[in-house]
Length: 258
Image (tube, rainbow, N blue to C red; front, side):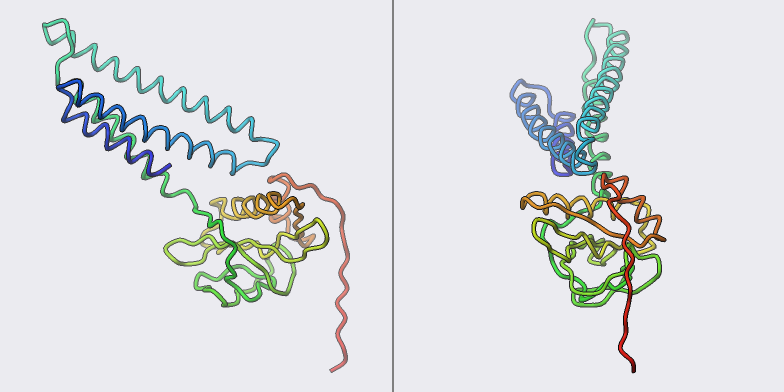
């Protein structure tokens, strides 16, 4: 998506300075078409991956509407610019500067959209162990591979044991993760879901949980999370993603005498 937008932006900037011959126009438009195709494919993939499976149709429809509205606005602005140039040129045709300005404007808009796209949280597709144990944890900003997470009572669920988290990192720093733990026949537990408090509210946990669930579903298995009954935030997250509350379980901890 970022590469496609950047490629299309480059094409329009080239057209802004080189559009005098048919060859220059064709080369620029071919480059623009390749960039737009890559960007649209990336946008569609991100939209589908960011919503529950039963809402993909709605999200795809909204994406199409936004794309259509954006195209209509761009076409209208470009048409108004060319019409104004035609009215003042005295030749009955738009002046060369009008095309230059239109192409440059399209290129600037695409460059800005590519810059915005780089801020979309990046999800790594590989399951790499980044913590030995997350306990009742919220990821520490300084957590590194094989390092334990910091613990708080705001964790998604009380748990102990190894996990295979998928980290989401900003600049090499772990800020959120989700992974797998229990694996009964045909089922896989989604566990170790945690986000650095400084990076909450950006949808990282939601995207990571969906990524883990997608990987589990691709293997032909079913996923299930769990959360403490008092952890309303985690429960809201799982319900919003599309999970349903199946049962409430009471855990009893037994310790041997010291």
